[in-house]
Image (cartoon, rainbow, N blue to C red; front, top):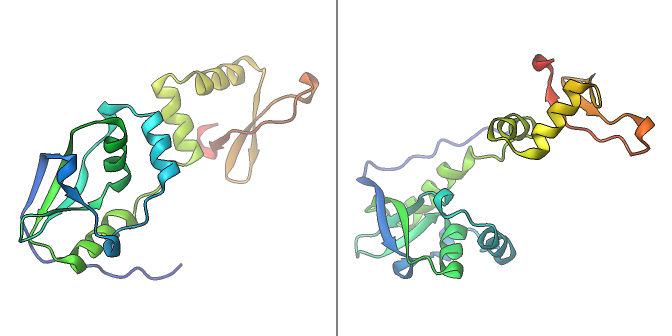
Length: 172
């Protein structure tokens, strides 16, 4: 595994929960990834406003607000007419420091694993996961070991192809 670089930032003031008008936010293309318009449109079409979360913004010494992390959520706000977005605002960073902050904020992020999604989906009562669990409990599906995970297998007698749902080995 490649060694991770130690990113460092100067001490600076940070405010949480700041509402900023969407129209006042700017993008610095040198310190930001490229906007994925189809992704943003998909997010807008499936938006749950209460789950939008806070973006990360840098307020430069001239007062301008630059998005460090959350450009797609900002674009979703523009697409859906949401006038303000909540932000974590870092004060006094320059462009290079904003780029470092972006790397710090995104280096450790990852999507939920299939197992995480399954377990959390059960807790949330999502029908797909609840029905899968019920089918396993009733014997319609069965859990079988495969390496370090378990798979829910659809019996071939039903005439459908085998479908698999990962399951962590310590849970069965």
